Length: 62
Image 1 (cartoon, one colour):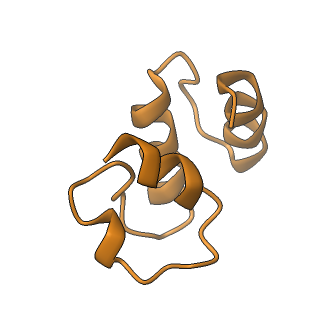
Image 2: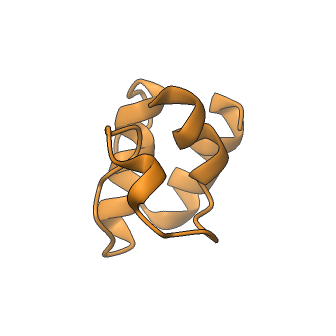
Image 3: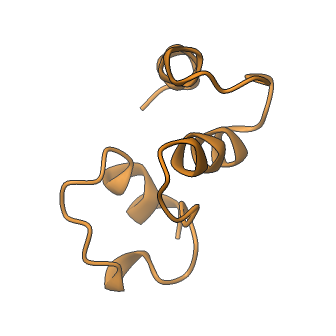
């Protein structure tokens, strides 16, 4: 997902600072949603969240 698309999602979720790097912005969105801020960590293949909005990008970054 492109950074501009992520910024739109962040804004719609009420994330205050959308000038983060991509990884940090996604983690801020995850926190806002009440989820673990696990994007891009080393356990992406093991997380089991198959329907996560960020899964495809996460698997590419880990």
